[in-house]
Image 1 (tube, rainbow, N blue to C red):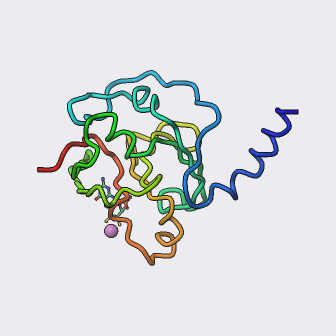
Image 2 (image 1 turned 60 degrees about the horizontal axis):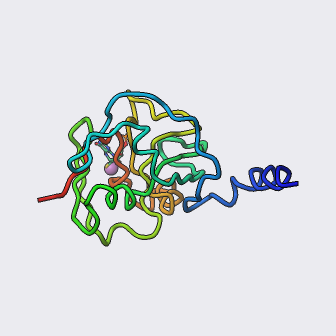
Length: 162
Ligand SMILES: Nc1nc2c(c(=O)[nH]1)N[C@H]1C(S)=C(S)[C@@H](COP(=O)(O)O)O[C@H]1N2
Ligand SMILES: [Mo]
């Protein structure tokens, strides 16, 4: 009976996940791999990040215009786990593109630090190793009525901003 209920919930999920993120019932198989990001004083692997509560959001965005299931952790949870709660933070990507976020930019489940798309780690030659997503903004970004400058891909460093 429980199994049937889960199956029904899974079928209903795509619509229910449209805007915000939802918790993940079952963690995906961990992926072994190297350090991919520096967060505060810690050098972290994908598996280390995925120790935090996992969240998912099905959305279309400029990097998955046909829609995809994005998986990751709340940026807020990662910052809290590394002593960065309440701080201004700088996120730097592999191309050195950098954004700065204030604590007030982080509300509820937003933003999502994505570790996977459709079950697979992000492609290291494009959006990987990590990408910041704002699921509640996805529809506006697709309609080009909101900017995507804070949708930073290729994140390699997150630290307190000076
Ligand atoms: N790492 C990184 N992320 C980024 C940017 C960038 O230059 N580097 N540009 C931002 C802006 S302003 C836009 S419009 C989109 C562009 O996405 P694209 O570089 O995949 O075309 O990514 C956003 N995230
Ligand atoms: Mo942009």
